[in-house]
Length: 377
Ligand SMILES: Cc1ncc(COP(=O)(O)O)c(C=O)c1O
Image (cartoon, rainbow, N blue to C red; front, side):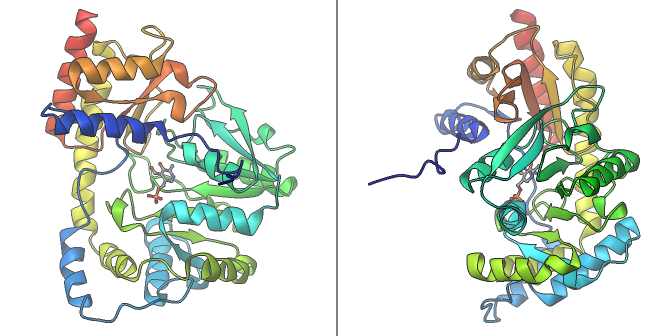
Protein backbone atom coordinates (compact mmCIF):
# COMPACT_ATOMS: atom_id res chain seq x y z
CA UNK A 1 0.00 0.00 0.00
CA UNK A 2 1.21 3.57 -0.60
CA UNK A 3 2.95 5.40 2.24
CA UNK A 4 3.32 9.12 2.93
CA UNK A 5 6.62 10.94 2.83
CA UNK A 6 5.50 12.94 5.88
CA UNK A 7 5.53 9.71 7.89
CA UNK A 8 9.14 9.03 6.98
CA UNK A 9 10.57 10.36 10.27
CA UNK A 10 13.75 9.21 12.02
CA UNK A 11 13.56 6.57 14.75
CA UNK A 12 13.91 7.69 18.35
CA UNK A 13 17.34 6.14 19.03
CA UNK A 14 16.88 6.13 22.80
CA UNK A 15 13.93 3.78 22.29
CA UNK A 16 16.21 1.46 20.32
CA UNK A 17 18.81 1.63 23.13
CA UNK A 18 16.05 0.83 25.64
CA UNK A 19 15.05 -2.18 23.55
CA UNK A 20 18.66 -3.49 23.40
CA UNK A 21 18.92 -2.98 27.16
CA UNK A 22 15.61 -4.77 27.71
CA UNK A 23 16.74 -7.74 25.61
CA UNK A 24 20.03 -7.96 27.54
CA UNK A 25 18.09 -7.80 30.80
CA UNK A 26 15.67 -10.50 29.64
CA UNK A 27 18.73 -12.67 28.86
CA UNK A 28 19.73 -12.34 32.52
CA UNK A 29 22.28 -9.50 32.43
CA UNK A 30 22.37 -6.81 35.09
CA UNK A 31 21.60 -3.55 33.32
CA UNK A 32 21.88 -0.05 34.76
CA UNK A 33 19.46 2.27 33.01
CA UNK A 34 21.07 5.64 32.43
CA UNK A 35 19.36 6.01 29.07
CA UNK A 36 15.76 6.53 30.12
CA UNK A 37 14.36 10.01 30.55
CA UNK A 38 11.79 9.02 33.10
CA UNK A 39 11.63 8.93 36.88
CA UNK A 40 12.34 5.52 38.43
CA UNK A 41 9.35 6.18 40.70
CA UNK A 42 5.65 5.83 39.85
CA UNK A 43 2.78 8.23 40.45
CA UNK A 44 2.55 9.56 44.03
CA UNK A 45 1.08 6.91 46.38
CA UNK A 46 -1.40 9.35 47.96
CA UNK A 47 -2.74 10.24 44.51
CA UNK A 48 -3.13 6.57 43.55
CA UNK A 49 -5.04 5.89 46.74
CA UNK A 50 -7.36 8.83 46.01
CA UNK A 51 -7.86 7.60 42.44
CA UNK A 52 -9.10 4.21 43.68
CA UNK A 53 -12.28 5.76 45.04
CA UNK A 54 -12.81 7.63 41.74
CA UNK A 55 -12.84 4.38 39.79
CA UNK A 56 -16.44 3.58 40.75
CA UNK A 57 -17.51 6.71 38.81
CA UNK A 58 -18.42 6.32 35.13
CA UNK A 59 -15.30 8.15 33.90
CA UNK A 60 -16.79 8.96 30.51
CA UNK A 61 -15.46 11.63 28.16
CA UNK A 62 -14.53 14.93 29.77
CA UNK A 63 -14.87 18.19 27.87
CA UNK A 64 -12.16 18.72 25.26
CA UNK A 65 -10.15 21.27 27.21
CA UNK A 66 -10.01 18.96 30.24
CA UNK A 67 -11.66 18.62 33.65
CA UNK A 68 -12.58 22.10 34.89
CA UNK A 69 -11.31 21.23 38.40
CA UNK A 70 -7.91 20.24 36.97
CA UNK A 71 -7.68 23.39 34.85
CA UNK A 72 -8.45 25.49 37.94
CA UNK A 73 -5.90 23.57 40.01
CA UNK A 74 -3.22 24.04 37.33
CA UNK A 75 -3.95 27.79 37.27
CA UNK A 76 -3.47 27.85 41.06
CA UNK A 77 -0.13 26.06 40.58
CA UNK A 78 1.08 29.13 38.63
CA UNK A 79 0.18 31.35 41.56
CA UNK A 80 1.80 28.97 44.08
CA UNK A 81 5.07 28.50 42.18
CA UNK A 82 5.55 31.64 40.07
CA UNK A 83 3.22 34.21 41.66
CA UNK A 84 1.26 34.45 38.40
CA UNK A 85 -2.48 35.15 38.38
CA UNK A 86 -3.60 32.83 35.56
CA UNK A 87 -7.14 32.52 34.20
CA UNK A 88 -8.03 28.76 34.25
CA UNK A 89 -9.79 29.35 30.91
CA UNK A 90 -6.32 29.56 29.30
CA UNK A 91 -5.31 26.08 30.52
CA UNK A 92 -5.74 23.14 28.14
CA UNK A 93 -5.26 19.60 29.47
CA UNK A 94 -3.50 17.36 26.93
CA UNK A 95 -2.27 13.81 26.38
CA UNK A 96 1.18 14.59 27.76
CA UNK A 97 3.48 17.27 26.38
CA UNK A 98 3.52 15.16 23.21
CA UNK A 99 -0.21 15.69 22.66
CA UNK A 100 0.29 19.39 23.40
CA UNK A 101 2.88 19.69 20.59
CA UNK A 102 0.40 18.32 18.05
CA UNK A 103 -2.27 20.78 19.21
CA UNK A 104 0.13 23.72 19.42
CA UNK A 105 1.65 23.12 15.98
CA UNK A 106 -1.83 22.66 14.46
CA UNK A 107 -3.12 25.84 16.06
CA UNK A 108 -0.12 28.01 15.21
CA UNK A 109 1.33 26.96 11.87
CA UNK A 110 0.42 26.39 8.24
CA UNK A 111 2.02 23.90 5.84
CA UNK A 112 5.69 24.61 5.26
CA UNK A 113 6.03 27.14 8.10
CA UNK A 114 9.54 27.37 9.52
CA UNK A 115 9.94 26.50 13.18
CA UNK A 116 13.30 26.98 14.89
CA UNK A 117 14.85 24.68 17.47
CA UNK A 118 18.26 24.96 19.08
CA UNK A 119 20.50 21.92 18.71
CA UNK A 120 20.79 19.77 20.73
CA UNK A 121 17.11 19.38 21.61
CA UNK A 122 14.36 16.89 22.33
CA UNK A 123 14.23 14.88 19.07
CA UNK A 124 10.47 14.59 18.71
CA UNK A 125 10.06 18.35 18.09
CA UNK A 126 11.78 17.86 14.76
CA UNK A 127 9.96 14.66 13.87
CA UNK A 128 6.47 15.90 14.81
CA UNK A 129 7.05 19.10 12.84
CA UNK A 130 8.12 17.05 9.83
CA UNK A 131 5.21 14.64 10.11
CA UNK A 132 2.88 17.65 10.13
CA UNK A 133 4.34 19.12 6.94
CA UNK A 134 6.21 21.90 8.75
CA UNK A 135 9.88 22.80 8.34
CA UNK A 136 12.15 22.34 11.35
CA UNK A 137 14.97 24.89 11.25
CA UNK A 138 17.99 23.66 13.18
CA UNK A 139 19.76 26.42 15.08
CA UNK A 140 23.39 25.92 16.06
CA UNK A 141 23.99 26.82 19.70
CA UNK A 142 27.16 27.36 21.72
CA UNK A 143 28.40 26.40 25.19
CA UNK A 144 28.70 30.15 25.97
CA UNK A 145 25.01 30.53 25.05
CA UNK A 146 24.21 27.54 27.31
CA UNK A 147 23.22 25.53 24.22
CA UNK A 148 20.08 27.68 23.88
CA UNK A 149 18.82 29.74 20.89
CA UNK A 150 19.68 33.45 20.95
CA UNK A 151 17.44 36.43 20.03
CA UNK A 152 19.38 36.94 16.78
CA UNK A 153 18.36 33.43 15.65
CA UNK A 154 14.67 34.32 15.43
CA UNK A 155 14.75 36.24 12.14
CA UNK A 156 13.01 34.46 9.28
CA UNK A 157 11.16 31.98 11.49
CA UNK A 158 7.42 31.47 11.96
CA UNK A 159 7.90 29.77 15.30
CA UNK A 160 10.53 29.03 17.92
CA UNK A 161 10.59 26.19 20.46
CA UNK A 162 12.66 26.56 23.60
CA UNK A 163 12.98 24.26 26.59
CA UNK A 164 14.28 25.34 29.99
CA UNK A 165 15.51 23.21 31.67
CA UNK A 166 16.42 21.56 28.39
CA UNK A 167 16.71 17.95 27.32
CA UNK A 168 19.46 16.69 26.82
CA UNK A 169 21.63 19.42 28.35
CA UNK A 170 19.69 20.41 31.48
CA UNK A 171 20.60 24.07 30.86
CA UNK A 172 18.15 26.81 31.83
CA UNK A 173 17.28 30.24 30.46
CA UNK A 174 17.37 33.14 32.95
CA UNK A 175 14.44 35.56 33.11
CA UNK A 176 16.46 38.12 31.13
CA UNK A 177 17.36 35.57 28.44
CA UNK A 178 13.79 34.32 28.17
CA UNK A 179 12.49 37.90 27.98
CA UNK A 180 15.00 38.73 25.21
CA UNK A 181 13.79 35.73 23.20
CA UNK A 182 10.14 36.62 23.83
CA UNK A 183 10.69 40.21 22.67
CA UNK A 184 12.57 39.05 19.56
CA UNK A 185 9.62 36.76 18.78
CA UNK A 186 7.08 39.55 19.32
CA UNK A 187 9.07 41.90 17.06
CA UNK A 188 9.14 39.38 14.23
CA UNK A 189 5.66 37.84 14.67
CA UNK A 190 7.26 34.52 15.55
CA UNK A 191 5.15 32.18 17.69
CA UNK A 192 7.05 31.27 20.87
CA UNK A 193 6.53 27.81 22.34
CA UNK A 194 8.10 27.22 25.74
CA UNK A 195 8.50 23.57 26.76
CA UNK A 196 8.54 23.67 30.57
CA UNK A 197 8.25 19.92 31.15
CA UNK A 198 11.27 19.83 33.49
CA UNK A 199 10.01 22.63 35.73
CA UNK A 200 10.13 21.59 39.37
CA UNK A 201 13.34 19.62 38.75
CA UNK A 202 16.03 22.17 39.39
CA UNK A 203 18.93 22.52 41.79
CA UNK A 204 19.10 25.79 43.67
CA UNK A 205 17.67 28.17 41.08
CA UNK A 206 13.98 27.96 40.20
CA UNK A 207 13.24 27.67 36.48
CA UNK A 208 11.50 30.76 35.06
CA UNK A 209 8.22 30.29 33.19
CA UNK A 210 7.80 32.15 29.91
CA UNK A 211 4.49 33.32 31.42
CA UNK A 212 6.55 35.47 33.80
CA UNK A 213 7.76 37.53 30.84
CA UNK A 214 4.90 37.41 28.29
CA UNK A 215 1.33 36.23 27.72
CA UNK A 216 2.07 35.90 24.02
CA UNK A 217 3.33 32.34 24.27
CA UNK A 218 2.25 28.70 24.27
CA UNK A 219 3.61 27.14 27.46
CA UNK A 220 3.73 23.35 27.45
CA UNK A 221 4.09 21.24 30.56
CA UNK A 222 3.39 17.69 31.66
CA UNK A 223 2.73 15.37 34.56
CA UNK A 224 5.47 13.06 33.25
CA UNK A 225 8.55 14.40 35.01
CA UNK A 226 8.20 16.28 38.33
CA UNK A 227 4.85 14.55 38.93
CA UNK A 228 6.38 11.17 38.00
CA UNK A 229 3.45 10.01 35.84
CA UNK A 230 5.01 9.20 32.44
CA UNK A 231 2.72 6.32 31.48
CA UNK A 232 -0.49 8.10 32.45
CA UNK A 233 -0.09 10.40 29.45
CA UNK A 234 -1.34 13.68 30.78
CA UNK A 235 0.05 17.17 30.44
CA UNK A 236 -1.11 20.70 29.82
CA UNK A 237 -0.72 23.83 27.79
CA UNK A 238 -1.32 27.51 28.60
CA UNK A 239 -2.30 29.54 25.53
CA UNK A 240 -3.18 33.19 24.88
CA UNK A 241 -6.82 33.94 25.75
CA UNK A 242 -7.77 34.59 22.12
CA UNK A 243 -6.40 31.16 21.05
CA UNK A 244 -8.47 29.05 23.45
CA UNK A 245 -11.45 28.50 21.17
CA UNK A 246 -9.27 27.44 18.20
CA UNK A 247 -7.31 25.00 20.39
CA UNK A 248 -10.59 23.70 21.82
CA UNK A 249 -11.97 22.94 18.35
CA UNK A 250 -8.76 21.10 17.44
CA UNK A 251 -8.67 19.18 20.75
CA UNK A 252 -12.30 18.09 20.43
CA UNK A 253 -11.76 16.77 16.94
CA UNK A 254 -8.32 15.23 17.35
CA UNK A 255 -8.57 13.66 20.80
CA UNK A 256 -12.10 14.24 22.20
CA UNK A 257 -10.36 14.52 25.57
CA UNK A 258 -7.30 13.25 27.44
CA UNK A 259 -7.79 10.06 29.53
CA UNK A 260 -10.34 10.84 32.22
CA UNK A 261 -8.74 8.58 34.86
CA UNK A 262 -5.35 10.18 34.20
CA UNK A 263 -6.82 13.63 34.62
CA UNK A 264 -8.30 12.61 37.98
CA UNK A 265 -4.94 11.19 39.05
CA UNK A 266 -3.20 14.37 37.93
CA UNK A 267 -5.56 16.43 40.06
CA UNK A 268 -4.71 14.32 43.12
CA UNK A 269 -0.98 14.38 42.29
CA UNK A 270 -0.93 18.17 42.44
CA UNK A 271 -1.56 17.86 46.18
CA UNK A 272 1.21 15.30 46.70
CA UNK A 273 4.14 17.68 46.69
CA UNK A 274 5.91 16.33 49.82
CA UNK A 275 6.20 12.88 48.21
CA UNK A 276 7.32 14.38 44.90
CA UNK A 277 9.85 16.65 46.58
CA UNK A 278 11.40 13.52 48.13
CA UNK A 279 12.13 12.35 44.55
CA UNK A 280 13.99 15.62 44.01
CA UNK A 281 16.32 14.78 46.88
CA UNK A 282 17.22 11.54 45.06
CA UNK A 283 17.92 13.42 41.79
CA UNK A 284 20.05 15.94 43.67
CA UNK A 285 22.11 13.16 45.27
CA UNK A 286 22.49 11.40 41.90
CA UNK A 287 23.52 14.63 40.21
CA UNK A 288 26.17 15.28 42.87
CA UNK A 289 27.55 11.76 42.35
CA UNK A 290 27.80 12.25 38.57
CA UNK A 291 29.25 15.76 38.72
CA UNK A 292 32.02 14.40 40.89
CA UNK A 293 32.44 10.96 39.31
CA UNK A 294 32.04 11.54 35.56
CA UNK A 295 35.13 13.79 35.21
CA UNK A 296 37.15 11.20 37.15
CA UNK A 297 35.94 8.51 34.75
CA UNK A 298 37.05 10.60 31.76
CA UNK A 299 33.83 12.43 30.90
CA UNK A 300 34.86 15.88 32.04
CA UNK A 301 33.29 18.20 29.46
CA UNK A 302 29.58 18.72 29.84
CA UNK A 303 26.86 21.32 29.58
CA UNK A 304 25.95 23.05 32.87
CA UNK A 305 23.20 20.76 34.23
CA UNK A 306 21.00 23.43 35.87
CA UNK A 307 17.87 21.27 35.92
CA UNK A 308 16.15 18.10 34.63
CA UNK A 309 18.01 14.82 35.29
CA UNK A 310 20.61 14.61 32.54
CA UNK A 311 24.30 15.21 31.99
CA UNK A 312 25.20 15.77 28.33
CA UNK A 313 28.89 15.02 27.94
CA UNK A 314 31.29 15.67 25.08
CA UNK A 315 33.01 12.32 24.39
CA UNK A 316 35.05 13.45 21.38
CA UNK A 317 38.27 12.62 23.27
CA UNK A 318 37.18 8.98 23.15
CA UNK A 319 35.23 8.55 19.90
CA UNK A 320 33.69 10.23 16.90
CA UNK A 321 30.92 7.63 16.79
CA UNK A 322 28.79 8.01 19.90
CA UNK A 323 26.32 5.41 18.64
CA UNK A 324 29.02 2.70 18.46
CA UNK A 325 30.50 3.96 21.75
CA UNK A 326 27.11 3.66 23.51
CA UNK A 327 26.71 0.13 22.09
CA UNK A 328 30.21 -0.78 23.33
CA UNK A 329 29.47 0.63 26.80
CA UNK A 330 26.22 -1.37 26.97
CA UNK A 331 27.93 -4.52 25.77
CA UNK A 332 30.98 -4.30 28.05
CA UNK A 333 29.47 -2.80 31.22
CA UNK A 334 25.72 -3.30 31.08
CA UNK A 335 25.23 0.48 31.44
CA UNK A 336 22.73 1.88 28.96
CA UNK A 337 23.40 5.50 27.89
CA UNK A 338 22.02 7.56 25.00
CA UNK A 339 24.12 8.69 22.03
CA UNK A 340 23.77 12.37 21.15
CA UNK A 341 22.52 11.73 17.59
CA UNK A 342 18.90 11.70 18.77
CA UNK A 343 19.26 15.27 19.93
CA UNK A 344 21.61 16.69 17.36
CA UNK A 345 21.97 15.16 13.88
CA UNK A 346 24.92 17.49 13.13
CA UNK A 347 27.16 17.17 16.16
CA UNK A 348 25.58 14.42 18.25
CA UNK A 349 28.11 11.85 17.08
CA UNK A 350 30.47 13.21 19.73
CA UNK A 351 28.11 13.43 22.71
CA UNK A 352 26.47 11.04 25.18
CA UNK A 353 23.54 11.71 27.49
CA UNK A 354 23.60 10.20 30.98
CA UNK A 355 20.24 10.17 32.74
CA UNK A 356 20.25 10.17 36.55
CA UNK A 357 16.52 9.72 37.05
CA UNK A 358 17.00 6.26 38.60
CA UNK A 359 17.83 5.24 42.16
CA UNK A 360 21.03 6.46 43.82
CA UNK A 361 22.23 2.87 44.22
CA UNK A 362 21.88 2.34 40.47
CA UNK A 363 23.63 5.59 39.59
CA UNK A 364 26.51 4.75 41.95
CA UNK A 365 26.83 1.28 40.39
CA UNK A 366 26.62 2.74 36.87
CA UNK A 367 29.38 5.19 37.70
CA UNK A 368 31.53 2.41 39.16
CA UNK A 369 31.17 0.33 35.99
CA UNK A 370 31.81 3.32 33.69
CA UNK A 371 34.93 4.26 35.65
CA UNK A 372 36.30 0.70 35.46
CA UNK A 373 35.52 0.48 31.72
CA UNK A 374 37.23 3.77 30.92
CA UNK A 375 40.27 2.84 33.03
CA UNK A 376 40.71 -0.36 30.99
CA UNK A 377 40.14 1.27 27.61
C1 LIG B 1 11.87 18.15 26.56
C2 LIG B 1 10.76 17.17 26.49
N1 LIG B 1 9.56 17.57 26.05
C3 LIG B 1 8.53 16.71 25.94
C4 LIG B 1 8.66 15.37 26.28
C5 LIG B 1 7.46 14.44 26.12
O1 LIG B 1 6.85 14.27 27.36
P1 LIG B 1 5.41 13.64 27.60
O2 LIG B 1 5.66 12.37 28.35
O3 LIG B 1 4.71 14.64 28.48
O4 LIG B 1 4.73 13.47 26.31
C6 LIG B 1 9.87 14.91 26.78
C7 LIG B 1 10.06 13.49 27.15
O5 LIG B 1 11.09 13.04 27.55
C8 LIG B 1 10.95 15.83 26.88
O6 LIG B 1 12.16 15.46 27.33
